[in-house]
Image (cartoon, rainbow, N blue to C red; front, side, top):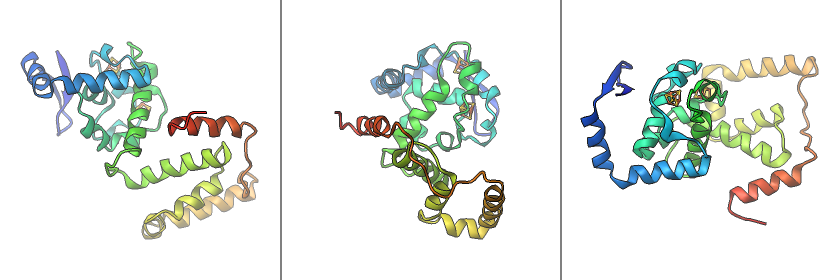
Length: 214
Ligand code: SF4
Ligand code: SF4
């Protein structure tokens, strides 16, 4: 019998009737989304039997509105909108603990990463705007330099809409500057970004991702 968290974060059991009803309402769309994600990620999502190990292993599951095992269940049911509107896809650290602990090799982290990219390319407004902007800036850094330069990353992020204002309001900017100065003094912060040697390969990957095949 499948288990899920309810809104109060309590475990509830889904009986077969409830599952059948959900599948009846969703019809082919659920199956289509499941097949699509499995095809694009090679993740064995159908094999998940809701054992919760991924959620128990996740260091940040308490901050997620849809827990890792629920993400997999939602994909099985085809609940695309709920997934792309979730905070989970932005809160996930890509640490891969969930994937490591899954007894069925479901590739939970890869699935969440894929959903995050789908959301970034969709018209759906991200639930976690600041984290979405950080994600976007991180990808821009990789596209420009093939690696991440922390000084460039934070400077560019701070120029994105609303970021600087929010950091000033919360005091995060002062903390960030103090940390930056400390790292600079210790020689751990490079002010000028260096390009990695494999830039050609990286740009090719970006072009392929955009559908501009060579
Ligand atoms: S650990 Fe694997 S099988 Fe268990 S709920 Fe998570 S994804 Fe499903
Ligand atoms: S990859 Fe994401 S979902 Fe998986 S354990 Fe890490 S933070 Fe949690």
